[in-house]
Length: 252
Image 1 (cartoon, one colour):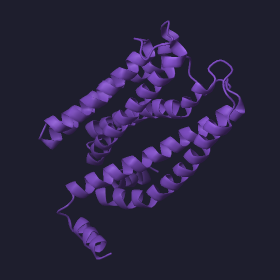
Image 2 (cartoon, helix red, strand yellow; image 1 turned 90 degrees about the horizontal axis):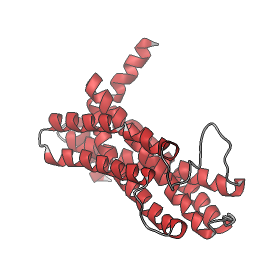
Image 3 (tube, rainbow, N blue to C red; image 1 turned 90 degrees about the vertical axis):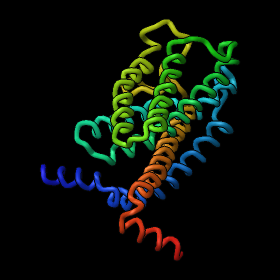
Image 4 (spheres, rainbow, N blue to C red; image 1 turned 135 degrees about the vertical axis):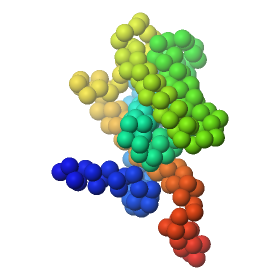
């Protein structure tokens, strides 16, 4: 078993193996994610009943909740990748972490903007310094900090390590986001989906939400794979396998 784990570790650390493996996975994530998003969004926007308190304004949940959940999950993935790079010196983990950062930042922006749009009819204001909203804003700043490090530090090794350290340290904000509605008096409603409790939403509202969440995660995989592959091609551009790959693509 240990030999299998060791072999997998070395394979994951190989840019060529990672590129070839993810090239096979990416189309599946794309088509599955697109199908789930199409069904989930149409179901949620056109066929799910209006909320008895919020009316039709609740329908933004089908974009807001997936984006908010995924922005937090993406940061955890980035922190784990950074930790693996720092502890086990796997360079591919730094590449994955770098690829996640701008995608996670985009998702955090979508979550904040859709939350503001949802908050206007619900709370009567676009923004309040609520514990959940403030901690989500901090999450965006953390993403921007990681991106800024990669843009500001020319030395690749130093940039990787500095960004990884910020990712790991900043992960303390994730449980703050999750439990902010329980620890403080907040306007934000409790979590819509939990693993320990039955959903409070009606099935015809809950099922399309789950579909859009899974669809978002599939699309996220496609985006990360694409950015990671581009980074691999740039870093390995002088190797024989990349030159061969580019020459083959040029012929087609």
